[in-house]
Length: 432
Image (tube, rainbow, N blue to C red; front, side, top):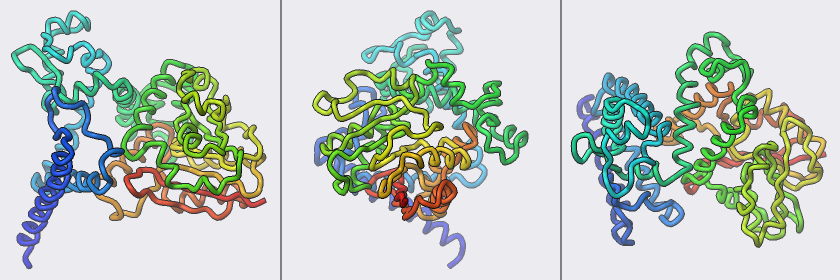
């Protein structure tokens, strides 16, 4: 078979994958009278969540998305693929502008607003607004029903009505994006550094401290980050409920204690306590976070079994004898040396049979996941490098951390994501 025939088969196969799997997804939506995907702001804000759509249908949708991306790369050819990758920065600029000036919030859902009015509200130049929103329009963020007047699309409406998403985009454009743009310089200045203060973030913000030290000194930044992460906590595949499928809590004795380090607003503790009434839970985080926890964040019926505790995991663990110490998307924020220190701070509190559970990314071997998922994971790894000289880890990396922390961490297992999950579960059993 010649090369041209193989190439034709590749693009035809991908086109068939898109067609077949889009059909599966569309038929399910129609059968259950659910809204079809649309850019119109008049449609339901978001396609139905994976919670109510069977996993096999979600997988079909994802196969269609992945195949369409690969088909686009093949049809575009090498040069166009490279150039199109750099164009995403312009969408980031537009989103930065939109979120900083709260444009989505200034445009009502039921009618368009003139650029003149937006300019007055924002204290900006009219033409700057027009040019930026027209650029965003190319990605279906806002529409221009008549010249100089802007209205919502489904995407911009989502920004307007989802505070957590707005916070996520703000954090991405104010903190992450500037850091990424300085990564090459940081790698050249501090080759191989694991120092959290020698980072692209440090260069981008003219700081000699780590991002987390900086945020601790600026409570408003920490609060914005917590709000942004609350969006991530509810994103498909990242929901706290997935831990209940990954670990058998029924094996824990009555009144066992579950400690969630870096537990933020108690998302994981709430899920565990609701599902397993025999377990007591403690969400630990820094004082500023704990002080800001809304009083009604935990349902009244389980509030007496969920405790919020101020604790810095760089200090020895104060809760001795818990059955489980849990980290969810925490250790990927730190270098290997720092992670070893964090794990060692658990040692004085550990009793025989206790477990450390880590929900985090586990980097797969190349080819084990789709290219779209590969891009997501590798992009996240680069983000962690830019932010804190941290990293995403392979299964062997995770085992190595526990081995380096203490030889009594045994039976280290890695359960890879399945059934729509995005985070792996790494488990270590303490053997005194």
